[in-house]
Image (tube, rainbow, N blue to C red; front, side, top):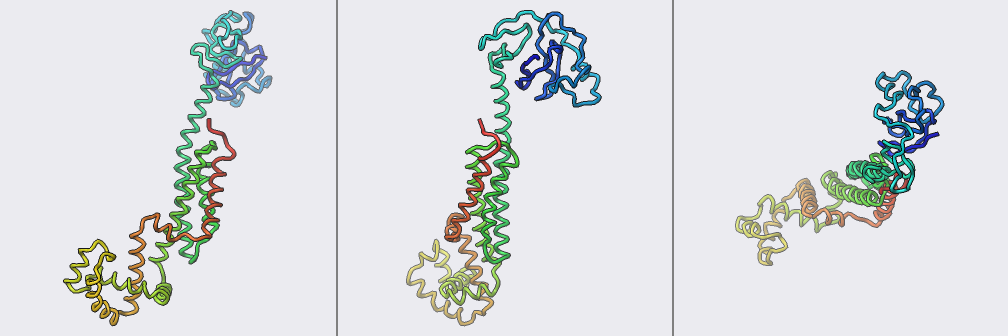
Length: 338
């Protein structure tokens, strides 16, 4: 048995000695690999197709190989030196090699460059993993965002947040990693966790926004009944936006950065037209004013502020479960990054 290393992929495998000096198919990558010569009496006419069942390392997958492929499998290299001609000793391990050898079959050193062939193969593998990791991170982000949107849609339709769907956002972020790369590492875990949190945040904020904009008349009337201060603020906001105040008062309001900067004197002058509006406003107009005011308040808040306004104690549980799922899927199993 001759054991040697494939030049293309650095896989070590063995073939019977009768194939010395011949080309065989590497079982690892499928490329042609030359078997090191043993002696000068090697029969150059032996074909690998004569008895392929003798060794599982030979490529016998094709029942009727193309002529060029069969020739490559069966014929020796034209430039193969005389078998047994001494080539030297490997500088790394001292193992003797034949003339024409490219890689030391014992340690994997590339004799011309001094680079270890196994290191080259590992580098190629790491590069492949790194390329797929970028795609996996993008998929993780997309999955988490879609999960957040779906969670919000279900919450608006059901009228309440379904906690298990929030947990599922973390699982989606982790599965985005699993689907596109075999790498499992802390960096992918961090990415999956970050996207899971983003998906949860998007779901919470969209739920609040859509519940306000799609609130039924009964829900708005419930706000009117239990929060009279919101109604007053909403009517003032509606009058400012529709420019319903007298021109002199409206001009002073327009000059303000916001209503919090209004002087006491201006607020006093606004009372008369405000009270007049309250006496004639219809219930439908009141509902529209409250709805518009709540939407405006939400839109003026930043994403972080909206999220802070919507968080509740039970969200802690679903966040922990989502983060644990995302981290576990992205870091356990598969292959460790090098």
